[in-house]
Image (cartoon, rainbow, N blue to C red; front, side):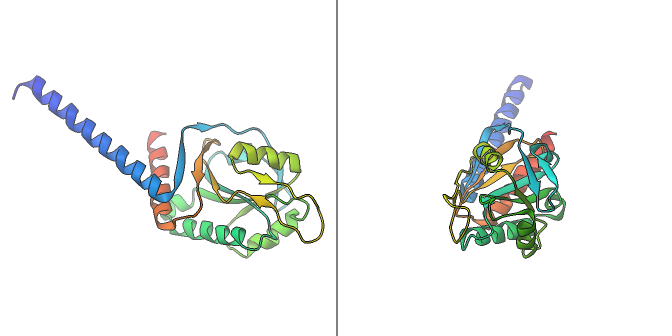
Amino acid sequence: MPARLGRLLLIGLLTLATSALALDRAALLDEANILLFPQPRPLPTVELLTQDAEPWRTEALRGRWHLLFFGFTSCPDICPTTLADMRRLLAELPPEQRANVQLVLVTADPARDSPAQLKDYLSYYRAGFQGLTGDLTQLQSLSRALGLPFVPAAQTSGDYSVSHSGNIALVGPDGRLHGHLRAPFKLDALRRALAQIMASESATQ
């Protein structure tokens, strides 16, 4: 076989293999209901408080993968279900990847969700959740940047609810928004897809 023809065949096989891998990845993302952006999106500087009442800035998102969900501790259904799903997803990742993921609950109800309230609430899940609260304007700025909108309650006392997104934001070690895990969550597919995303990112660094 002439050398030129051999090179062309090799290029063709590599192209087919690359296309097949891309199709497999797209199919897995679709199965897992994950939306990945073509280019990660930068986040603005936001200042909040952790559940330990310590200052927190968006720069703290760098260095690890973060899964962020906007909810509130008085939420009767979607929030506890989603946090339980996040805990299970984390537990099912390979140990080396699990150590590189931080779960985060950002409150959509700062009037009731003090640092102490968040700390008490999140201790139930025993998954190392980080809780964030603070000024409503700062929380809304972060929610818009993450594409996880919520509608502030018209009241700040008594029994009330808060409308918020059911999706989870995926922020990479670069501190940028990479995409969304969209409800309803398919945990087995999510585990496989997230592990692949993290491995792919590590391979490019």
